[in-house]
Image 1 (cartoon, rainbow, N blue to C red):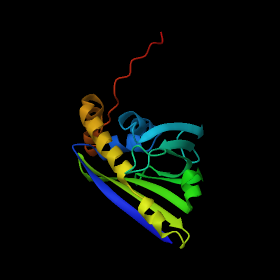
Image 2 (spheres, rainbow, N blue to C red; image 1 turned 180 degrees about the horizontal axis):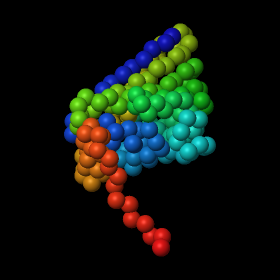
Image 3 (tube, one colour; image 1 turned 90 degrees about the vertical axis):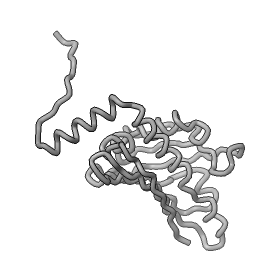
Length: 187
């Protein structure tokens, strides 16, 4: 059986580029862990630098079961599309596959809605044997949605970081060259 579940979180006041700077990199899982340690207990990079081919080992608490047994799995980044702001990771080993899923893919999309307004769309595509219909109830975007909301709050609170992105975006629209001042310690 194949299926997918998707959810969108609005990010008014946050540019798509500011969100993508986080979502496109390992910073996403780092922030997810920092902001929601009760959901994402641990994340380790097995191999890679955050680009396509990177494998992470993730330990999560399943949605709706905060006191339950954590699940550990490995996922590989299979797509990072900077132009369309789409990132995909597929589970390659661990508890999710042991449950009976034959495919479990997470897609994260950052959609620009305006100069300073975005949407974060989280989608999970999954497959499992027809004899295991209960697995459909185990699929939830809730942890990704919670992370999206926290990351939006984080960026809104990081005025300097967000302000820098807004300046860059405005300069790009006006075709003005902009480069932030970089201090060098070399003599």
